[in-house]
Image (cartoon, rainbow, N blue to C red; front, side):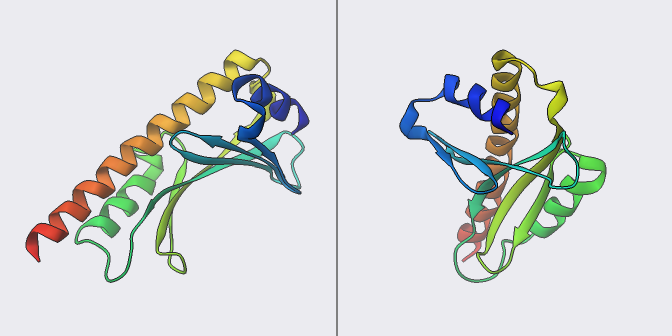
Length: 137
């Protein structure tokens, strides 16, 4: 994990990198991106980010179906898992990756950029469902 943290430090200003017990968090323009180890597997790490807060009330019609379809063989998630945290009423994207395949700062940058593109895609999807819900009300 320390190697990826060093790479992250090269990508963002010092105040945008926060260490914690499990790993580190990058404070990016588009939100927080957390990296933490899997514990049992030395080279396996996780990356997680909140995609969207859904607010109060029921989920927008069709959103649960889209989330399930997104997770079907990682369709529309580029290998990550999309999930609903019902306590926060928020959607998260989490990916487990083999850290041994990220050995340079450029590879780490490409990984982060790709993960953020997937997050942005899902944010647009959620916003579309939320807009449709508001239009029906």
